[in-house]
Length: 490
Image (cartoon, rainbow, N blue to C red; front, side, top):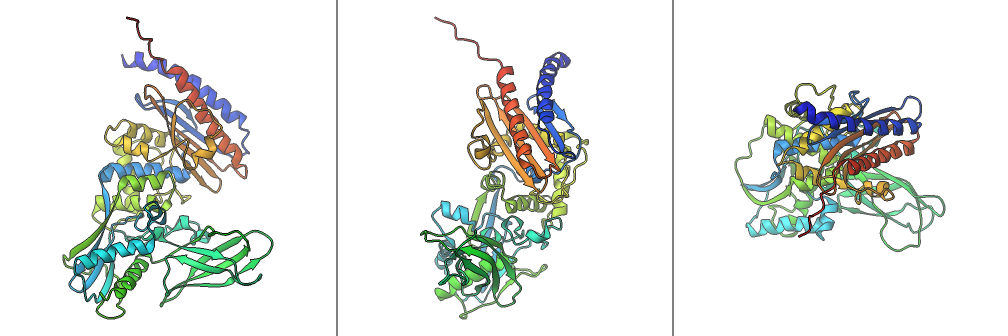
């Protein structure tokens, strides 16, 4: 009976595979380009297209689908990251939960807040709880290990937002936003403001200049300093007569938990809630016993929010925190990249069986070039997630549709008949697109993975191939799904 059911489906799949093979042949990719494609009917688990699909390839940000899906299965759809602000005697402890969303500037703006407003809410809770005479503020970041930078990340890009360090207490997506403005005269350094802002956050602008011509090319880097959070701005900025604030330069912050603690100390001092005008701010010792203490404030972030920022906005920090947090949950040890990789591989084998192909997991976001996964393995994982009645809806909703995120521009001129949910992926020489096409009427779903590695300099051909394959899947799904029978007249 099973053979009789699958045989027509396999025959139809051959039609789709033939179409996709022609698209690959006609893409005329550069010599040495590697293309791997897998398409699976989710309900039956039947592969419909397998083109070099068992070859392990670099997934780039498509790895986020694996990371977030496994994290959802480990942590559960009702999981929340909970950062606690605790009074332990006269000590104030900020107990991190690895929440990547704590003080996220995008999420603050969506709620009409800024950093001072966020800090103000914590101070208000402390006032209500009668907090007084605080002698020190301690950052408890032990939910994660203290290896904040993955060794596989590009050394020369570690100051950029997508290489933000990953800590047990994250804050403001672990970046400082620097807003440049016109200097007093052409040739002078630009003026700057920052978010967050404090007297001990210092920005040296002597490495930057304003100019009348050319384009704006500014970048920043944190510089070593024991006393302050010090940064230096480099490059040039073209002056403008336009009103309004420029887009910020985002630079990574090495100790985001300590930055939050110092901002909180300043706000508590302004309310007279410290024992002295200034108090020590420090990281907790690894074996330090803090006692039980009493939380006076808890900041919670649902996993659904984290997954949307991970998969729609492709925020690397969010994926890395999901990876380390599920490792902590499973092992009871500080979350780490090796433990996170072990959890992902183990869960893959539970879901797909022992044959998962040559899978190598180096991080959670796909930024490392050491990540490897066969397209067929990732497609099988997507199909398995679709068959889970509890996890699929939040997983599916965490992805962008064709009208949002990076998909909007790419599919604006493509006339899809069905719903697309997908994740893009890009690092140097790598372009990938993975997700689902869901029939508009009966809900039948195909999972697809398209990976292009070593494409050279012509990214346009790789992107067009992605879009052509999705359009072919969409067309095939429309024509092969039976139309409803017409209603009989009364």
